Structure formats: C-alpha cells, structure tokens
Length: 324
Length: 311
Image 1 (cartoon, helix red, strand yellow):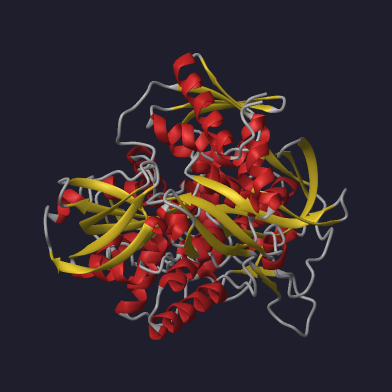
Image 2: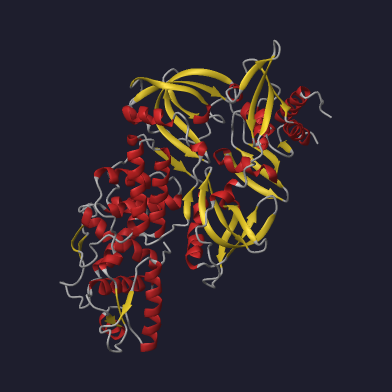
C-alpha cells in the first residue's frame, strides 16, 4: 500500500481518458486494467474528484460518478480527456512486440504495416532511437511457423513427425495447435494431441515434418486454451522422481538459466551451484546433466547417482577410453 | 503527505494543460491548490513538482508572454506534447498493436503493454492472442532492471552492479543498449575497467543497479549497432564434423547432414558446424548412441566433459 505519489498521479491521469473511452467500467475492471487493487482505484477516484482547474468551483472540478462500484463514469473530465502519450516502457513493450510480430510474419504487406506502426510508436515517444531491440533470432523461427499459425487461425489440425528427445523416438501425430510460445530462445507448440486425448507441448525445432490436416479434430477450443504451458514438456509429464539436489560447477549456469521452469531453488557457493530440481523425468535429467561442462554431483540419491555414473562409463566406453 | 502531493501534482498538470498562455510562477502559487507556505517553500515545492512531472514524461514548456520584453518566465503543457498521437489507426493496425502489447508474460513489460493498450483502446480487440495464431514471448524477470538502465541511457549516466558470471565482480558500465537475444535480455555497454564494449546477461546481475548521479558522462557512438557484439560470442570457424550414430537413433542429428552406412550397427553423419560447445552437448545427450569422430577438438571436448564428472 506504500505507493509513491508519482505512481498515483500517473495512474490517475490515465484513469480519466480510459473512463471516457469505457464509460460504465466497474472498479474491478479498472483494477485489472491498471494492475492494482480496487482499494487504490477507489482512492484514485476520490482524489480525482477533488481536482480540477484553478478556481475549483463545481464547474471547474472533475465530475466523476463513482458511487456505484459497478458503474463509474466521468461527466466532466476538464482537460484530462486526452490519453497521455506512451511512457518509455509502454512504447518499448509495443515496439518490441511489433518487432517480434514482424520477425514471424511472412506476408510482405503485413511486415510493411507492422514496421510503419513501429515507427509511429517510436516517433510518438519522441525518440530517434529506443536503445532497446530484439536481435533477429533464427531459433525463434521454425520452418513450420507459418503452417502452424495458419492451422491455429483456421482451427485445423496438423500431421507431424516429431522426435522426442528423451526417448529418441520419432512419432507421427495429428494435433490441433492452439498456441506458439517462445521461451528462453526456443519455440514451443501447445497442441491438443488427438491420440493421447490431452494437451501436449512440443519443441518446434524437434518437428521433422508437418502438413495441414483436417478441420477441427478434437476438443473444444475453450478447453484447449486453459493449459498452463511451462515449456518443459520433455522434462515433465512422464515418470517422476522427488525433488533432487544437484551440485554443478558455475560454468553450467546456462543450464540453470535455461531451465528455470524446473528449478525450485538455487544457491551459489563459491564456484559451485547448488540447485534443487523439481520432480522430472529421470532419463531426461540424467541425459541433460551428462551434457554439462564441469563436475556434476547428485546429492542424497545414491540410486540416481549410480545410474548417472553408469551412463558416464557407457558413454566413455564408446570412445574406447574407459572410465579412468 | 503522499495524498496531498498527488493532488497538487494533478492540479498543477490540469492548470498548465488548461492554460492557453504561459503561467507565471506567481500565478501558479496563487491559483493552484496545494501551494502553501513561504515563497521559498513554494519555490522548492514547484521545482520538485516540475521534475516529478517530467519524470512521468510530461513536457513542461518554459517561455515568456512576450518575446520582446524581459517578462517573467512562465510554464505550460501543450496538448500536442501531452497527448498520445499515433495518427489514424485502422482496425488491422489496432489488431497488431493489441497483439504486440499482449505478447509478453513478464511483469514489467506485461504491465507496460496493458497500460499502453488502455490508452490506445486496443485492449479489448483480441482478448486471446491465439485468435490471431499468435506467438507469445516469455522472458525471465530480468526486465526489472529496465527502468534504471534506460534511465541511465537517457541521461548518459554510468551504472554499477554485481555481475555473477564464472567470477563474481563489481562492474562499472556506460550503458548503450538493451537487446533481447535468444530468449534473454542483454546489456551492451562500455565496461569502464576493461576499456571496451562488453555484453552482460541481465539475468546474471544480482541485487540492484546503482546509477551514478553525474549526467552526460559519456556519448553513445553514432550509429551504434549491438549485433556484432552479440554475435562475437558465437564461434565463426566452421568445422567439418563427423559423428558415428547407431542405426535408427539420434534422428535430429541425422537430419543435419549426409548419412553413410558404416556397418550393421553404425552410420556416419557429416555436416559443417562452428559451435563445437553446443554440438558436444548434443552428442553427449545420446550417451553411447552417438560418438564424436571429427574434428579432434569435438572428440576431446566430449571426452573431457565425461571425465570431469568422474573426478
């Protein structure tokens, strides 16, 4: 509740034009849009009710009706009817979002339109340069992005060949895509898997082939959008083990950064990283640990440590160097 | 105190925005609610208020009533400088903007996007980005550092922070740019101690960022491009890589190059790659189903990583 005066001023100045555009909004709606509590919105409205042009007679004050929390309206905004120009962060959020849309858009007309909007937003900020950018990321763009987006918009399934990394098995599946998500540099497809009758997450760079399938094969759309994607399908959803404590060397910190979805907690002790990993597929975990630079120790789980040692020896045997 | 100050700042904004002419300080002190006390107190109050409103991005114009006479300086806010003006927006424009503002799932940028859309009236157009076959971008919580870094870039102020890479160190940097690259935010700037441009992963900054008060402490080189500094982290020398892959295994690696059968158990896959560090990880993922053959550096890297785990 200890909010600065400036935050209140900023929000209050934006409340009036918002209410002019959305008369009859409820306090709850306003709290949601302005990402704050209903108590603070009520206080803002009371505050605005006391403000106005010098003179401060009833003709000069902002006239705002907020007695009914479900119906707020402004009958006299004075001069605050105008939406304020975008703040730096607001402009950056939109401009970078447009940057990303432009990166994944394949239609040249759409690209040009998005680019023009981006320029208009930068100009509205009065900045020649935003000093914030998205570097073109090849990993974001899968060769199947366009096809999948078409499937999402037309609610059609796709038939795809997918290689699951942990089992190293190629499967052919018919799925109904619902969303593409980019997480820490990788693209993930969330889709309803018709054969398994459940929502699944697929790493887009593991799709070997895809083509458009039939129209709408399965579950209603409203069910599909309820999933909470984690971007860690390979790590979850199979047999699980308990929370594991793993000791890594600091040079393996990239693994920790890229798998925040399965990290319960982490602590740096000198050159070691002590990481608590949530229950995950054991096979996935051991293979992932094998790829890391530096030492890896699995604490408090001799069985898993033994499996890991066996895996290391097995791999070394392939190089004819044995385990010593 | 906060309530009174907020009320005074809103009243000052309304007064300056509602006035067609420059308002002299004496008029502001007399007419705008909230200015009380001695003239010194009101002066200090007004100076702080101007700074606060400017921090909100509100431009307060300073001028005089008459250019030919040495009149008292006055203040006003023009509707042009205050208001949002993106020009005429078509339904399609609004759809793109609406989508762009909802791509983020990161506290700072999500909130900024929502506020922006509330101003543009695009917030209700697409409640579900999936309706447009949308992409959703998620990043970590690094954008909490945006505000101090961008503020420092604006004022060209140096910053310092604790950086937790393989070593933990205090870094003093002249910030140039923030860039999202491969899913993470990076700060690119001049590392004062090292005397060269360096790239810092925001996720590795621990604690808060300290902004040095002195402004205009450095210049950002004209036409500065962060891309070469980011890609400098990627190896450029390309190697012909050969991997022995057990039949019917490692499908993703097989798809990368030409396949030559070696015997009943193994195939040889050849392709070019520069990033041996990442390739070694991909090889090791397959345990003994994939063996690095060439180049020697790759083979040694794979063996070294395995042996490190036994020591």
